[in-house]
Image 1 (cartoon, rainbow, N blue to C red):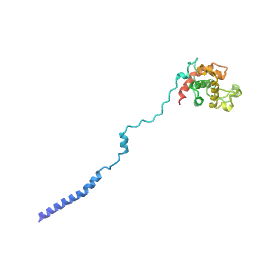
Image 2: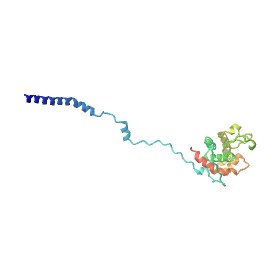
Image 3: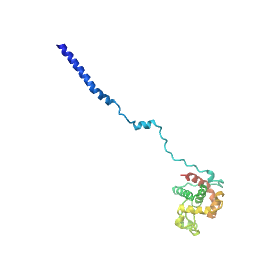
Image 4: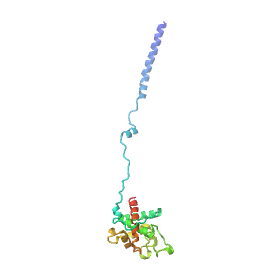
Length: 209
């Protein structure tokens, strides 16, 4: 009798285990199955080559031959520029480009400004003033260059200088000091030559910036 009960107990336990296995097996298998479907975004990105970073187009350097085609004349001078003077040099370059004139015209203009005002936008200096000369190029309202307000606007003053330069036949091939003097009619016609190298350096630095 005890043996029969023992066998039934064993069979009952085995049947329960078997039954539990049938029920639990598919559930366990279902939980272990990875979700179908989509490849993670990170995997797609990892499998593809990285896109090259966008880089701005390199701007071509200014050809030195266009800046000083005849070489400098005489001993060259150079001064340290503060932020206002640098901004005035940039304003001359911008006005030259707007006028559709080449880098050489900007070199002549900046050299003229360096000689006339050290690239300082000068107002009336009282007893120290040269007649009624004003601005970067020391232009005179009484000579028809414009009003005091116009002449002390760097963009206007540069445009006025360039209009005069355009009227000089062959200015592109002239020594800088001769081209500048023809426009300015200065008492010191050779003084512009000393600023040619610094003017060219400024144009090379800021023309494409």
